[in-house]
Length: 340
Image (cartoon, rainbow, N blue to C red; front, side, top):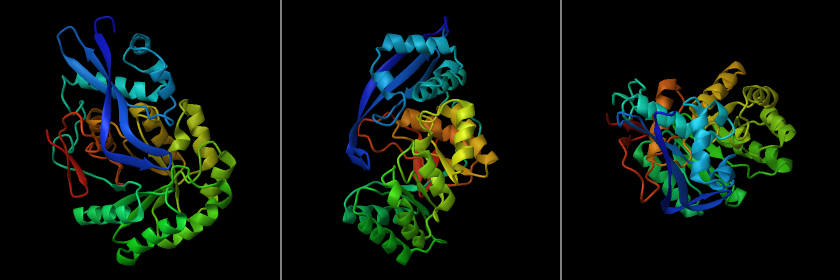
């Protein structure tokens, strides 16, 4: 990369309203923009967006100055091989390189019906945690907007209240009309997780993401084998960056689905490895963004469209932030579109 200038610029994004998860509430989001400029003045931009308390490389990135991080990126030599342990940096490099090589085109060189503006990506409507009435209101808004698949964050309210919320949805919308996914973000205790999953199963759920905390392999393997609700792994994949370890984890736990996030799970290349191991073990998968700004979100959308996965994807619109970068992405009903 001797003939290229590279820079890494931090930015703090601010949520329009607090974003609640079972791990806490986000009010702001720190990201880093990687810029590569060639001798002709062409520029490629990528986003490094590790999440505090979640990403395996967050502490490393915030604990080192820009010069050290840039040295690490230069050593990657456009390939990203030595960034396996730093998925958010790897994703930033992948995106910036594709952006540069495409001549600064926002499609990043992906040639799909989506990148040409002819087709949209079906997405699930994400229902953020809140109090009971707030979540009911958000659910109604998503259904009225035309979504046929909703994903509910659970684990913050009393479980009985969360069951009541799901029960209310199912009273009005059967499984054939509305697909429901839930995401526990590891909120269930191993000793009562199966009992909770049996109660949730009454409401014809598509899947539950990460019912218990990551790293409890025996308990998770048992849940994947016994749960009446299909289990999707998310946080479980974080920090598992070597291909052989990815294969062993999927073979050992035998999940029904994987939820793939480039910023967390090894960049685009790393997520494609996860998808391959999932398919070899008869598991499904879908792609999800992880609170990136529009730079990262556009890259994930362009890449996801190239994979041609028929399941609803977990891609937001980036409108959570008051100070986001401009975007060519638009939501029409339940589909995400790109304006060429």
